[in-house]
Length: 453
Image (cartoon, rainbow, N blue to C red):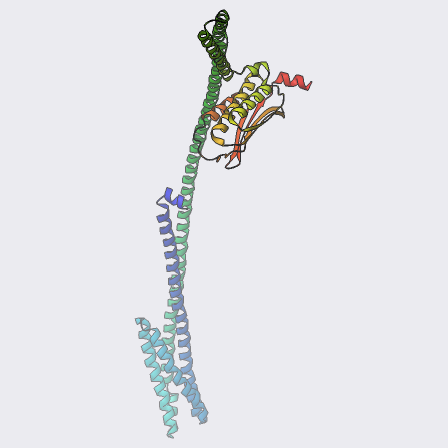
């Protein structure tokens, strides 16, 4: 709802106006109908009062004549009750017609005619009580009473006609009010339906626009993902090329050092040996210098061999990956003083994959020596599920996996290098529990098929 109001700022005011109009029409019609019905109720009461007034006048006349004919006092009780009721009914009608001048004028005439007739009845009763029954009967037998009763009936009928007209007008007002209410509600309902249709059309257009934008966003996201995948593949390929170029350069340097520098050092060592043999027994000082020179040449040859092994381990080509890893583990244990357990199995791998595993183990133990503060290292190589699995694990201090690494270029480069060979590299480390580096690479297909055969 809030989103709809934000998108359409005029919706909420229009809804408020429509609701207010609906409430106004409904409440106005209700209160007008209630007022009209109250008036109709009052009119019905007035009609009943007029009928009772006319009947009470007749009851008074009947009681007066019964008393005069029989002389019995009990006939005066209906007469007295009728007089009292007539006063009450005139008071009620006076209040009813207080704001209706035509009806009030007729009521005054009716009240005067009724008063005259009641005075005549009272006069006859008084004459009869005084013993002047002849005079009382003369008044009774005259047409004065009949004329007064006729006037009372006419005025009562006129008041009743006014009441009937008022009732009809009230009913017409009720019908008119209900009709206006129906028209107003129908119009507001139609406007509400129209507003709903317009709103639904606007919402549909907005939703279509949003879907179009989402399609555009998805297309752009797919394009970016494709571009990222392409760039990642290019970076992986570039990394593989750089690593291959570096290894080729190392091989060339190792070969040059072995061939050129090795030949020079060997030649110098042979020359020193010839000179030393010719100076045997003479020039002790020269003999000592030649011995020192031979030692220096031997150290140079040993340094050359170590540099060549670091650049490109000759054992990898001559003895295989397993023996090379054992030699690497043994040399690391000797140089660092850390206990190393090495468990390697023959695994058929391509030369490039063998070099990747060797470099991974070399990088891992270098990091262990620098940062892990470990006392024990485990190195293993095995074949599992058509994959070569190499694991290097230590019991050092470890690190938090989500903590930013201070220097992870070596492992990052190794990850790209492993992925370039179609493998995976994972690192699992916990503070205080050591680190485990796992590399999986596909086996060499021809060799593995031959072994399976």
